[in-house]
Each structure stands twice: as structure tokens, then as C-alpha cells.
Length: 293
Image (cartoon, rainbow, N blue to C red):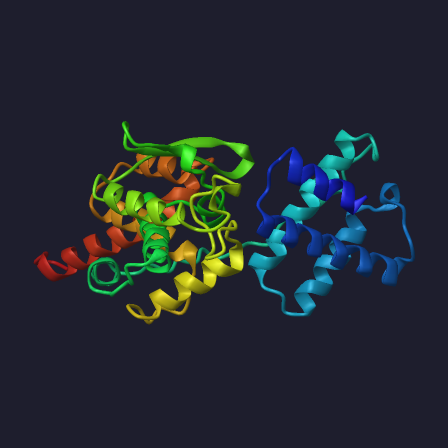
């Protein structure tokens, strides 16, 4: 049942590899608990009480509210799928509530740090150096996700219109403008890429040294290495560049709806977290300048 569900998420919903792994692990953990605590129940026998008891155990094990919320999301998607497939007649998740999660502000590299990373850090002039810098530039200048970078095709680039097309969550396409200053760098990189052995076996823009498509771990390790040169923030992942992109746009007064569209968010609520730094700056200015502050 889990395998069929993961197949559905893979081929119909187009979930990322990272999300598929997380969903698979959540479901395995859930059914291990169910089988150990209640015996081998059929999915039709699982009720909201069984699910709540698992959540209570997770809380007792000091699992964070954010992780529990993610596991609830997994179960909601799973049981909704079972209902769609007529495997169950009633969804037990309708009586399950997620715990409240305190809003955590995203990790962001300051603009000074990003300027250092893009203008002062030395990159080699070979394929590796051009590729590494281009990965950073695309993640920061376009605000794309790691999975979107990995799956970006050369054919997704419109040189005439200065834009790229990416495939985001839920298999949704969106168009993102390119900074004209990126074009010479992209073209220089592609020229190097095309000289690689086996480079033409696919059309993915970002490749490994052997010409094959890159992957999650490689992108994370590469970005982490370079971020360590310019920032001391705790988290140094590719997603931090996406957060930095959105925060810096917000700081410069960009329209929130425009940022939402660029990021590919389903709702404005997800984008509003990036206004926090702007609000904090306003508070600081008020405190320093207002005679009654």
C-alpha cells in the first residue's frame, strides 16, 4: 500500500525526492507503531484514536511540533489517497488536529554576505568553478528550490526573453526573470558543459563533472561549503539562498504578491514571513527617531 502511494506521489503529484523520502519514512514509522501497539490492523480499521495515540507517543519522545505537523500532513495525504482509491470509506484524519507550531524566522544571509559571495570569493575558470558559481547565482537571483535547480533544463531558458521556466511543487510551472548580468556567465558555463564527455546524454543545465545530472546531496554540500566563507548563521543550505532572495526583495520594497509568484507559493500566508525583517527595521527606526519612543 505504501509503495503504491509513493508511486502516486512520484508520477502523478510529482513530489520531490526529499518529500518522497520523508513521507515514506513517516508512514513506515506509523505502521511500525500500529503493529507493535495494536497488532496488524487493516487500514480500514485504523481510527483517529490510533493516530492520536501515535502522536502522543511522539510528543512523549520530545519530537518537535514542526516534525509532528509534517507527519500529520503525511497521514492526511495518505488517507486522502486511500479514500480516493476506495480503500477506506471514512477518513480518520478528520478528527485529528495538528499541534500549534511557533513561527520560526527563516535563516538569511545578509546582503553584504551575498555580495562577498558573488563578487569577492574566487571561483576557478574551469567547468567546476563556473558551475558552482552558477548554482549560487540561480538559487539566489531566481529564488528557486534545490529540486527546481536540479531539474532545470537548458531548453527551459529563454535567452530572448531573459527568463527561465521551472517546474515547482504540485507539478506547477512558473516563469522567473533572469538578471541580464547572468547571461554571459550561463553561456560560458554551457560552453564548458558541452565539452564534457557524455554531456549530451540529457539536457539538464547543472551537471556533475562526469556529465550526469546532479543530486540533492551534491547541491547541499557545494552550497554549504561556499556559505561557510561568508556567514556564521547556523543553517547553511541551498534553501537559505531562497530565503535570502525573498527577504532582500521584501527589504527593498517589492510587492508581496510578486514575491509570492516568484517563489511559487500557493498562498500569501507562506510569503508573509519574509516581511518580518522589514517590520523589525521599521520598529528600530521608530525607536531611534520618535521623540516619544
